[in-house]
Length: 285
Image 1 (cartoon, rainbow, N blue to C red):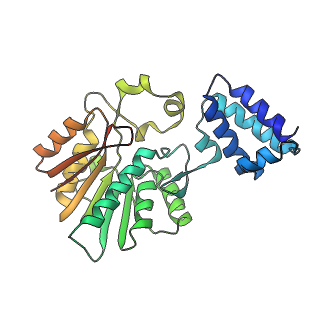
Image 2 (image 1 turned 60 degrees about the vertical axis):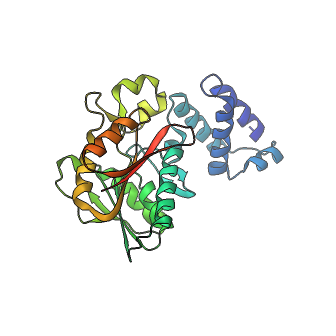
Image 3 (image 1 turned 90 degrees about the vertical axis):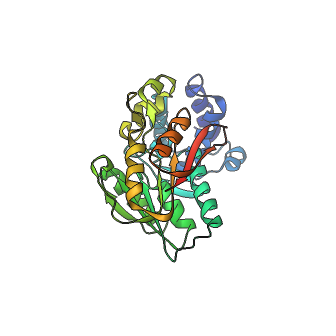
């Protein structure tokens, strides 16, 4: 079997399950990782013979894609904010919207008149570490900490910190049972679970079947549970000139603003993502 045959079979097996452009993207990603062939190489070397081991590899991946396992989990990695990240079933797959949250924080820090000698940053519910590591990579004077309830997720975050040559202070912690944080911070950021159970029916099968429920979902009866708890901790551990940043549920922006206003936060701003959805929030104590 040559590369042309491999690609034709790959497209045939997945047609009807995924959009054609996504199938093409899958093939290019897998070819680069396992065959060391770029998209241009594929076009120029259509008759190159594929080894039996790689044919078996692609057949196995096809079986996994047919069950809608995310391509990022299959290859064990993804890119976020221009950096490589290991991901697995213990961590969410980082989204482009979350890159916007990182950029918002970086833009805000640039505009601050308040210039601490060491910028203390905390990422709550860090998962793969994508937010914390991206901030550490772009804020050389920052000391970045990250916590998560999942020990397995923290292990992934530690690997990703080393991969990207930054240092994180990592803590295993269930914030729901915490009365205070390890220290005071200039910035507290979180992308906590915010998808309500009622929204599950609108979600893709690959998310529902494979990504960790603990990091995604909240009960319909109290969808702001994590925000309320994190905001309460921020009231105690956010420095006077500091700021609190959230990624939020697009449908709950007004509820979030009301919650934070009632808790005494000021300068509450909701920002839209690239899709025009309420997705980010920043405020101060």
